Image (cartoon, rainbow, N blue to C red; front, top):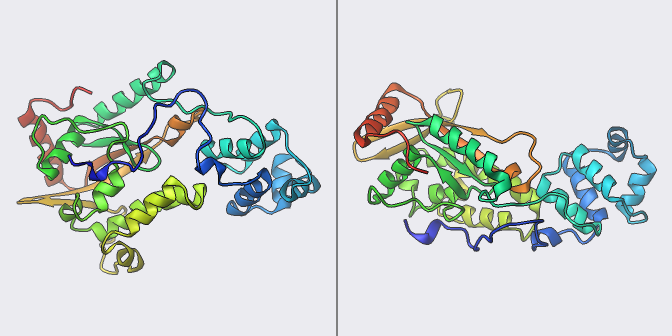
Length: 302
């Protein structure tokens, strides 16, 4: 695996509270942060007042900078506006408070049960592929069939380990003409859905953020901008968007599901996504079963 698909920064080991990164300094003050999220969620000041139990007059004062919130008020407004945990920390920092939500590595002992749950879900998906990714689609964990599929598509040696813990960006890998894109015949349809996830993070983080930079990089790939602007009027009327993989004489049709962990109180846990691949036809199902049987296993030692 080349390093072309790795994130552009080295991901530090995260312990304790999240540091004040460039993204976290995007809002100069709490007033602008609150106004941004209220408008992003389509709330009027009156609606926010009604749902939060904070007077409309006080919300107006908060947005004008005439009043400063308590830490409890920042957290309440973040919950009502459904602000992501990472951005609630941003709002707290903008208001002069320490972050409330930790951002820990999966190797942290306190996340041991989470890691076990992820391992279980990945193993249960075999013989079909599944990946754990973060909010920017950096690969955190693959299951055995996913690792086998990646090696097959990229022509990697059978026993070569798949880099994980954020060393591979799945979105970049799929959309880069030098990556998996040559093996995805319907990449023009797939890229729209893939970019949607990154665009949502970029809108949350704002200009200059890591998500925005990744979105700019992906849309700069040859053909991506035009593909996202041109609707496919010949698409089959399926209840899902298939991902077609083709290499040599093998053609696979898959669809995916995205799962998240419920009621997270940790930034890392909140941002994890489990993408599971399912066969869209009988031939694809048989191919994965045959590969698993040939390997003598249905999962890899994680």
